[in-house]
Amino acid sequence: MSRIPGPIEADVLKTMDAIVKAPEVAKALELAQAGAEAAMALQVHLCEIPAPTFEEQVRAEEMVRLMKANGLKDVTIDGIGNVVGRRPGKNPEGPLLVIGAHMDTVFPAGTEIKVRREGNVYYGPGIGDNCSGLRCLLETVRCMNEAGVETEGDIWFCGTVGEEGLGDIRGSKYLFRENNTVNRIDGFLAIDNTDLGRILCSAIGSHRWRFTVEGPGGHSYSGFGTTPSAIHAVCLAGAKVAHLKVPADPKTTFTIGTIKGGTTVNSIAASCSVDIDIRSLDDGELKKAEDFIFKAFEDAVAEENAIWGVTDPKKQVHLKTEPIGNRPGGTRPDECPVLQASRAAQAALGIELTSYTDSSTDANMPVSLGIPATCLSAGGRQVRTHTIDEYYECFDIEKGPQLAMLAAVALVGLAGEHGTAPLLKKNGV
Image (tube, rainbow, N blue to C red; front, side, top):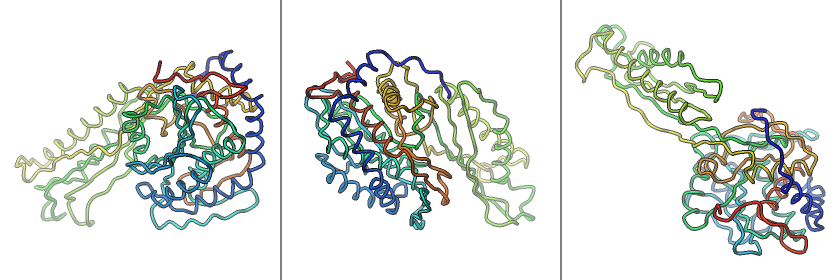
C-alpha cells in the first residue's frame, strides 16, 4: 500500500448503508451473482474479437450492440473511436459520472486469440486486461437496468480506445477535452485490473520520447577515423542516462525501452533510435529527469563528433527528438468523493482495502484536471498480463459490477423512495 488512507467519512458510510438496503439495489446485487456464468462467457466472447491499439473498430461495434441490448440510450462511437452510452438520471441538475473500460489490447494484428478453458482458468491474450473490465462495465449496466435502479444524475458508460502503450490514453484525453466543452463530467471511474482490494489514489505521470541520432554512416574499415557512429553516440548517451539518480519519494523512474539502428556488422551506423519512458508522481521530478536525459543525448552527440574530430556539419551525427507519449498525472486527496464512495462500496461488500496506490490508467486525464476519479477492478485474477501466455482465474467476478454499481449510485445519488443525495458536486460546485 503506497499511502495510508484517512477514515471513510461518517456521512458517506451512512449514504452507502441506505443504498445497500434499498430493495432495487439489493436485487441488482443478486443479479450480478446469478449472472456470473453468463458474464464470464461474455468476457470470453469479447476477448476473441481482436482490438490492437489503434485498431479497436470491430470490438467497438460489438460494444455498441451490447450497450444497446442492455438498454443504454444514445449509444454512439465518438470522434476518436470511444463507445459512449448514456443512462439517464431522474434529475437534469444531477451530476454526470462516466464509467470507462478500455477496449484495446497490447497484442498486434494477426495475434491468434482463441480462449482455452481449464476448470476456472481461461487462457488467452487480453482475457484479463481488459476484457474483464469490459465484462464488468456491461454487467453493471445490465444489473442496474434489470433491477430498476434509478439515479439522480446521468451515468455514461464508455469503452475507450488507446489506453495501452503508444495509444497514450487518447480515448480518455478526447473524452475530457472534447465532451467537456459541451457536458461537464463531474466524476470518473475507470475499470482496469482485477484486484478488488486495489483503489488508485494517484495517477502516475509519464513522458515518452524517441531520440534518434543520424549521420552519414560509412564502411567499418575505410570510414574509420573520419566518420562518427550513430550507435556509438547512443551508447555514450545510454551510459550517461544510467547514472541518473532519481528520488524514491516521490517515486520517479526511467528506462530506455527499445533501441534500433545500424544495417550490417561491418558498417558505421548512419542511424540509431531509442524510445525512453520517464515516470513520476511529481511533475517537477519528472521534468528534472527529462532535462537530464535530454542533456545526456546532446552531450553524447557532441562527444562522438569530437572523438573523431569531425567539425563539418555535413559529416557529423545529429540528434532529433520526437514526443511519443504524454500522460498527465496527479493525486487525489482522501476526502475526494470518488475515493470515499469506492472505499465505502468495498466496505459494504466486505472487500478489504489492500492496495491504496498509484498507476497509469484512463483515470490519469481527469485526475490531472482536478476531476474526482479513480480506477476500480473487475474481480477474478489476471496473470502474465501483456504476454501471449496471459490467463485469467475466474472467481468473485460478481463483485466487480457490484463494486462499480454501489460506488456509482453513491456518487450520482439514488432516486426514488429510498433516495440519497449525490456525493458528487455538479460542475464542481
